Length: 191
Image 1 (spheres, rainbow, N blue to C red):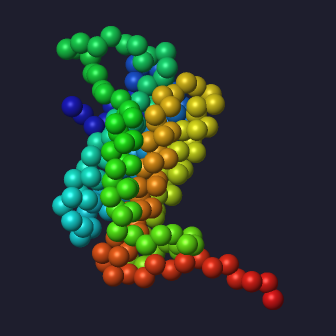
Image 2 (cartoon, rainbow, N blue to C red; image 1 turned 90 degrees about the vertical axis):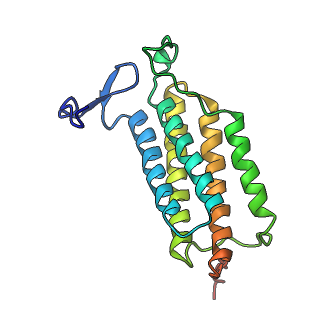
């Protein structure tokens, strides 16, 4: 299989099912941002973290590929026949969201309650989590905008929302594990 096809040399690409759209199409922006998020999660996974977190991050990366495929499929192509000659991908569902919630709850049990917003940073791995969280929020915003133009599976938005929560809690957990300082945001008072 050749990596380059030259079919996108004029600024267009194909969605799942063959529909051609400009590379700046909102659907492309949404799943392209999910791809960017997936790369940042790979960067977190490459840090010195425990094997359990690595397994969780690999599952999340796999789920993000599924979510990207869902976004790459326009509504009119969702009912394509499946079979041995067709690609069939499972969908993000409630179980995917429940998995994230269970991981958030497990980490939260070991964390002090939140009393302030927290300034991102303190350790490189923590900072990567916050960057991924911000990219996740951007993917969520783009997907929300796309949902106003075209039907999308509602579980996509739920999953992205919960994933950003997971990344925030992971950042807090890794702050403790790396003996970094969590700095609260305390607004300056007017003089």
